[in-house]
Each structure stands twice: as C-alpha cells, then as structure tokens.
Length: 232
Ligand code: SAH
Ligand code: DHB
Ligand code: MG
Image (cartoon, rainbow, N blue to C red):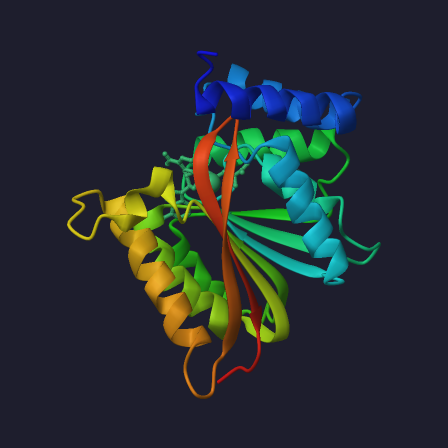
C-alpha cells in the first residue's frame, strides 16, 4: 500500500463524481471552456460546488453575492439553487476571467440571472452597497485570500439576520497553524478565521460559525460556514 493520502482523496473524488455528477455536461463544459481559455484550475470541486448549491437552496437564497468568479464554475452551481426570481452578483478583478465566465453563463442559460461586476472587490463592494443591492441571502468568499478580512467586514454590512456566509480556502494544507508564516494568503486566512471567532464567541455574537476541513482532488483545505445572528 503505497497510495498517498492525496491519491486516495483524488480516487474518492472520482468515485463521488462518477456516482453523482457523471452526466452533468453543463458543468463539465464550463470547466472545459475555462481550461481552454488558460484559467488556473482553482475552481471548487464538483462535490464542493454541489455543497454550495445545497446550502444556498436550504437557506432559501434569492439574492446571492460571490466574491471571486474565475470562470464561473462555483457561480453556476449557486445559480442552480436560485428560485425563478433569484439573482447572483459575482465580483471579478480580471477582465479575462469575467469574459470567460460570461460566456459560460450564456452557454448554460443563466446570462439573465448572473451579473459579473469587474474590478477589485474593494472598489466594487462600496458601489454595490451604494446601489442598495443588499441585503444578500448567501455570500460566497473565494477571491484573493489577503482580502478575506475586509470581505468578511463587507459581508456583514451587506447581510441580514439569517444570511449564510461561506468562505473557501481557510485551512490551506494546515499552513493555518503556522503563526510565523510569510505567505500573505495564509495570513489573510488566519486573520479571517480570527475575525470569525471574534464575531462568533463574544457575549453578543453576530455570527454562528464553524470551519470544516475539506480534502479531495484539489488537495487539503477548508470551508468556513457562518450564519448571521444580528446586523449592526
Ligand atoms: N469561485 C471560483 C474560483 C475563484 S478563484 C470557483 O470556484 O469556480 C479566485 C478569483 O478571484 C480569480 O478569478 C481572481 O482573478 C479573483 N480575484 C483576485 N483578486 C481579486 C480582487 N481583489 N477582487 C475581485 N476578484 C479577485
Ligand atoms: C487559489 C485560490 C482558490 O480560490 C483556491 O480554491 C485554490 C487556490 C490560489 O489562488 O492559489
Ligand atoms: Mg477557492
């Protein structure tokens, strides 16, 4: 038995994909178009995408905010959770990524339900607040990790009681345990997790939270999951 943990996680993800997602050509096409366009292979996995879809559905989300679109793979999973009058606003820094995502949304029949807002999220989030686009029912954080603390602050501003906040990449191969890390992405996740704890463990918490470790074909990382208990 010389199988590494990573080989096993990849094989089990292949098993889950075969069981549950094998005939899902819409999602496979979106991923293929993103790969062909040269986008990095850092979208959520199929089972994680379906988790986002289920969480959005279970929370009855109609107005969804995503920070970090890439080719829109996670966005499409979230779009599948929407009721007929539901909408997604997804924020993306790269004009090229936004273009690939818009083509993926059109091909999947979701062009009318998803708006891609180009720019650095810290520039577009104030616009979105000023436009009164909130409160959002479900917020998925998956952009630059050094921005996560700011994105959590914005998520709280754009939330209502009951809003679900999910953040990808908060464990980072366990690097999160290294207090002296020089990696800005890990530092961002550490600061984010500390903020999550401060908001969840005070006398009058604004969040109810957990962090779930994730393993699979994309390695070892984690999802932070939170429910907003109060705003302001
Ligand atoms: N959610 C996607 C993956 C997102 S990858 C999926 O699972 O399918 C992270 C994305 O965040 C990249 O496309 C990157 O260009 C974008 N990004 C990086 N910095 C950003 C910023 N400051 N504002 C908005 N998006 C940013
Ligand atoms: C990276 C970003 C992600 O959102 C992810 O899930 C994995 C890796 C990255 O920027 O390296
Ligand atoms: Mg991610």
